[in-house]
Structures are given as C-alpha cells and as structure tokens.
Image (cartoon, rainbow, N blue to C red; front, side, top):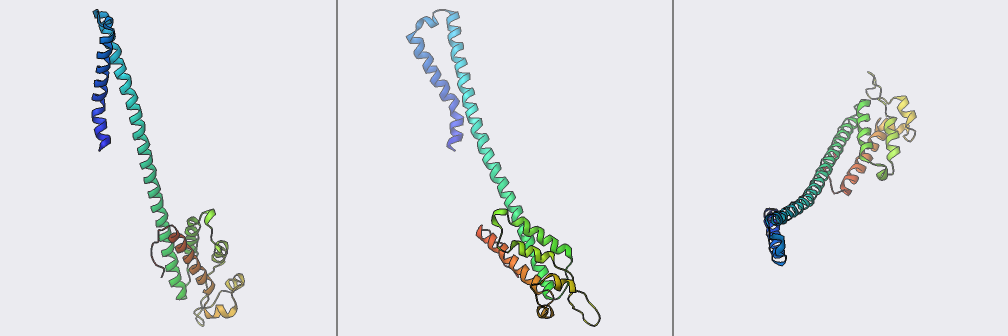
Length: 207
C-alpha cells in the first residue's frame, strides 16, 4: 500500500521540489530571467532536469518490479516442479502397492510394471540422496521373472528366477515364489516414504 502511494505522489513531489529549486535559483541569480531568451533557457533546463529525474526513477522502479516478478516466477516454477515430483512419488507408491498386492496373491506381474517402478524409484533419488540398498533393489527387480504355471501346480517358481536370485533359498521359493521381490518392494517403499517425510512432504500411508 505504501509503495502504491509513493508511486502515485512521487511525480508531484519531484515537480514541487524542482519548482522550489527553480524559484530559489531565480531569486539568487535574477540575470537568468532578465530576457525572454534567458527565461526560456532557464525553464528548458528545469524541464529537462525534471525529465531526467523521472526517467531515473522509472528505471529504478521498473528494475525493482522486474526483480519482484523474477522472484515470483522462480517461486512459482519451484512450486510447480515440486508438485510434479510429488505426483511422481505418489504414482510410484501406488504402483508398488498394486504390485505388492498382486505378488502377495501369487499373481505374476508384467515386466513393464517393474520397469515403471524402477523408473519412478530412480527419478525420486538424486545422486546425493541414494539410499543404502539402492543398487541392490534395482538388481533384484532386474532379476524378476514370471513364475510358470501348470495344471498340476498352479504356482511354480521359474527355475531361472531361483537361480538368479541366489540370496533366496529353495525353501523360501516354495513358501512364496515372489518372497524376495516382495521384501525388496517393501524396502523401496520404506525408503521412498522416509525420503518424502524428511522433506516434510509426507503423502500417505503404504498398504
């Protein structure tokens, strides 16, 4: 409000100050007004000075407005960028939740969903914020394969899946063919939620 009032009255204040200065100078040096030529030159000087002062003020004021607009634009950009990042995090969390639900029900997941989870997981963490098991998580998801199904055994682990995921024993596979993948996805979920909460942007509970 003060800035608006200043902008409204500053021109009049400048004009009054220059008129006062012209009046004082005219009284001190009356020869400047002794004939029409001198008077015209005297008035021209003060009018020019008024124009220069106004131009300088406008440059300063315009520069200030430009800086304020740049700050607002930057802030808006950062907010939009953060909203996009939060949406990516939310999408990744939802994909993990959905995948966990299917895997726990012994339903095989298409590789494309694993790829989307990995893409979201990678985009969330920058190089300076990589969690401890970051690469391990990705390696385990990279080794994921479907289980084979047959009439005699509706859920039977793919032999390649067992061989690649060497940290998982045959007994674990027989208990649940996707046990290692489920544990990995849960760990990734915890890492994502912890990362989000550390930025004071917690966005929901995991299932």
